[in-house]
Length: 212
Length: 212
Image (cartoon, rainbow over all chains, first blue to last red):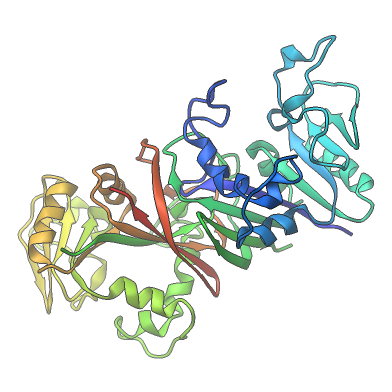
């Protein structure tokens, strides 16, 4: 059976987006600095249709994140758009006509919606919680892994329900001083096993296994 | 001129002590897990008068933290005791008769008190803020480094005042879900330079340089 895992970029002070998100700063003020290490990589640019980019110590980390994924799980904000945009001509999210997933994506939301089929990615919308969405992702994943793409709420729900097997924090060298905290919705004390630490340009990748 | 630096153990979710501190759990529930990597080391045990202990990838990290320190800075809670205990027979803090500092220690506090001399460590109490304490520590350090021992408030005051040159986060593999956050008192967005990442048993050490 595949693993349930997530891989997320956070600031030193634990935020996955900066304060005061806006159209100008969709990731909050300073939030784009969390992803600079990734956006510089050839391994990120190629699947997003961009040329060039670096190969460095982060490359195998990103490749491992994307390998063997049978289905994706994400929250409503990660998919994109507000509920008001889900009318007769619902928005397709951040991802354009050819999203980089190439696998079934399950979106946890309070708002029911028909599946959205785009090239070889289908988004399905699940209204009865992260655990149910994960069960459906598991059934669709064909024994491969399930990657939780975020955001913090879905990650927290899955962690608290004991559904996560492994995760990687990619810690960017920035103090944001505010924004969306990754772990704010949790309250349990839980010991993990540190299974990998990678030093790369402008980021530290630390991978943990959740003991069961 | 020496560096101003700190080195602190935090949970994955950014706490330097667990929730609900008590006499039974002085570091909060689960907080002792933050320091297991350190307490297991021969490099920690020897200066604290204990035998045995491990030598591993954390050993040079701890040795570098303790090397070339000319003075220490710490907050009131880090020194120990409550103000009520500072009467005719004030408590000597957590540290016993022979504290492991062997250098001048400056304690930031609201409560004035005469210097406390113990073997070769002298504690001095500074009531006009972290910046003033740091200036006094600088004068006492003889060109060597100043190590900020914590807690979060003093660290945050020094960071916000632009007084820190470098710091190491030793990230322990535990989610505490609550407690004392390291960076809660800050609000500025600040880019840092990642200058070292060390993988060690049960801990990831990441060192940052603060750009000036």
